[in-house]
Length: 405
Image 1 (cartoon, rainbow, N blue to C red):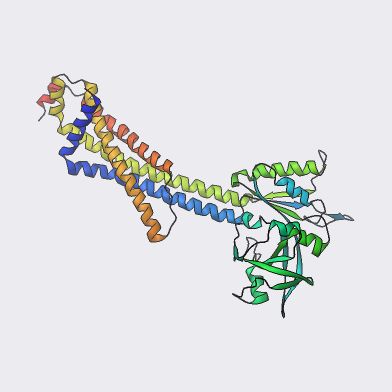
Image 2 (image 1 turned 180 degrees about the horizontal axis):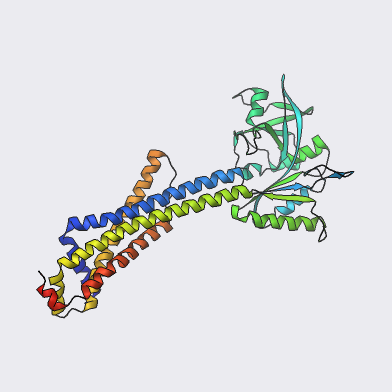
């Protein structure tokens, strides 16, 4: 018997009891729709978590100068004159490094008109907003040309802007005096809030690091280098490569201590990993339970169908149908139920995910992989749970089947 004929018989048999067929498929529809919707919610949540953690700097690597010792007194990291701008340029060439910003900080009393404020002056590079995922709210960040020429330009944090000019007052183009030197305000950063250590990140002024070195501090070394890896998973490798590079550049012999420090945001990376694992386990559990329920429903209805069609099976076998033909017929019926239910479930899942986004505003994202896996699971479920009823039908004795009432 050809497969096309078997498929036609299976569809005809399912069409005899449309309500029962629909209710049987309903279990698979709900299961697959639940999987698609939960995967969409999970993927959207993971993307949102990833963005928030990246903003906090999970893929950041902080390189700081080593500690400075004077008369046996250790002054702490960042005080040694071992890190130079050329080191930052070399780090930028390493594989896996996305953005690099050299840094040198100081504090100063800043004056604007009749108002003044003591704040941190952060000398940095043009990539800092990209490393920190920190957009400019008004105006623009300074340019590579400003860094190259050590221009006296400044980008204010919102707290500093409020203290020097007042809330919601545009300071663009205004002159502020930092250590009695005039700086032109070119931008205002978006509000960032407090850091994990409680520091107010908005109480600051960003200027080119070259300006801090040449105009404010009169030095040639930098204090730190902020590095962003392409992904959070690459931070450890990038950190190791940076350490190897700097030991080579600084001519540090084997066994000698580093004159720099390299740190990654390992704690945040651990939080991200645990959140992802928890989400994955939750989705796997929901998928397993939903499809299991749908599969049991298909097996139950196929067992009922075998009982109802015992005489039909006996008649077909009496006129020459082989056991494998009967087995294949019932197996095809189970797979058809699963695939039709899976297809409708996928469409419903897309609709539910879209509805959640529109009504609740939660981010969702249905990946092609999730659709393929859901449809594949539907087919496998049909084969797995349909095999026993199909084998039971194929094993019937034709004489006993013809006598069945």
